[in-house]
Image (cartoon, rainbow, N blue to C red; front, side, top):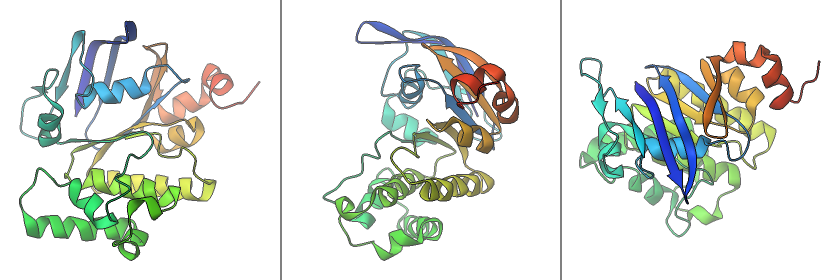
Length: 242
């Protein structure tokens, strides 16, 4: 679905990504874990065009028949059109817009009104509370509801690849489990997911594969199960000693 090859990105004069190589296959959930400052959010922002590569290449396969497409230099709008949607850290919903209006913002590149309404109903099916809150301003929602709205808004562009940054941040464990169950459903219904997550244990349990980033480089890669069993990962990110 997407390949990063030798991607280098500079932020504020500092090399934030130092030759990152990773791939996400169609139909997978892939987790990026690592300490704060490791380059996880930078990786997502680079894929979505918010940051530019200093070196390297990002290729995206738009459909089952198409050849991988070089998206390294595309503008964010073009990347959304290609089939990639980014749900950012901190949710970043529009607090003064209603829940419904926030969802429609996610479909701003589309003009298929009937299909848009069908996707609003799809999001309501995933997150029934959003149907109940449809006319409430976004800033009246709880933290968990705002996270649901942010994911729903990202899905409104009909992405083939969903980039998801820290969905569990600040949420109660029960809500985190609910969000992760929805991510499994989203994957099972055909959307590939690249997930940045601070809760490494849950992320690796959910993920088909994972990468560990350390100071802008890939330190480890493997299946979610393999990484969860790795002693270095267990000590550094899962809080397990011995």
